[in-house]
Length: 265
Image (cartoon, rainbow, N blue to C red; front, side):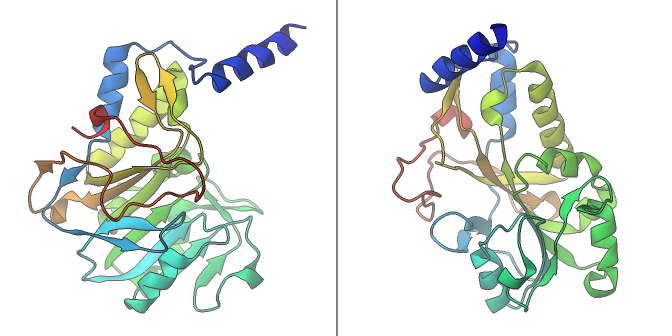
């Protein structure tokens, strides 16, 4: 009976966009939000991939990049196709995807990228190292859409491998649960690790679900974030307006998610 009422309460809160978790105070929530603030790093942004889910905005500084690692491709390879047209090879990994559905011009692993090796999983660092004969020490572009496993991947990836990444794109999941102390710490830890080596240059909320009110702040469920390695940042200026002109809805036919200004300014 208690379990039944918990489900009913969660459903009511979800329908009314009220967070189930309120363990974290507003000051800490705002500090977390500010970690995602994007900046003008001295480059125009360009769109790679289609004008819907699977396309991302990246800084126009692809020179020197010959290889991409792409985690979680589902049945969408428009991003990798566009990179291929620019002379950039892609290594793909996704256990849910059948190899017959992936164009043979890509190097595909039917594995989930995680922190360990198993029949279905491949350690992130082992995956990168297995391509060392191809990628050498050249700059990389990295795309991660791992359905919440991005936190495990970020926690596990070696600093030396992060150093080799020039452009990093991550879709962060479950941000609407940031009011929970444990989830807050997981997200905060992941961002803190990345921000030691990268600057945020763009954010975009996935509109598959509306925002959730966590205390007094609206949180998107999923947030696409583009980072640039600090070694390549030309400047760091505040961005005053979002969305970008090249932003498009992930899910066509659903209302867009417009981030409040505290997410970027």
